[in-house]
Image (cartoon, rainbow over all chains, first blue to last red; front, side):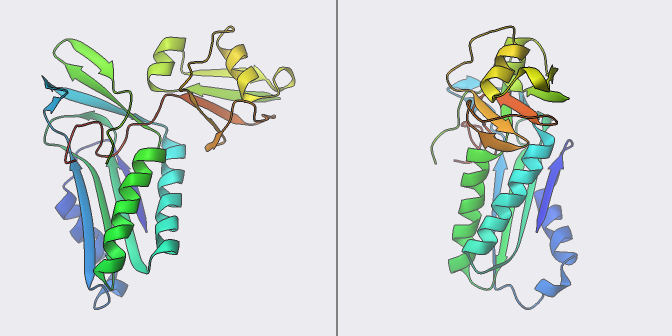
Length: 145
Length: 85
């Protein structure tokens, strides 16, 4: 079970390889790996967005991502999970979040991966501030799934 | 005998500070901690509260050594129309 908060950009594909390489116990056991990658777009509400700043509450964020991961493991028959989430200044096309679930079967990995992103969005203390030209504004709420 | 109060995101900017230390003998609830740390400012209706990293209500008790955080609705992950949904 991995939870990582990053202040610098990351390559989600390299993270997946690195995590899996560090878990030899998964070899031969995971028939299914479900992943979700959230990436920053360059528009919101029809306006161009140059960048955004992602603030978080480090200790609480880490704690809740660990709790959410544990809940997924209790609820579905899965082997491992990985959450990597950015904070700090983010530019369009930068990955914001990587979620991965390893399981024997997709019937377990898909719903567990969906659970991770929905619970993360609802509970993990992150806040986005958009930079539009010379203006900056806090994003007030998430969009529905 | 102290309670640490933290403010995040838009609330930090509204309140004008990111942290405050209160005398634990003077506050009993999260609501009172807010009032003491903001000079009696009204708490915005959508404010979320965490005591020692767990979500809590405004009337929840606080005690010596607690960390009480106030923040707006959370907007992490892929959401807020920034990416793939």
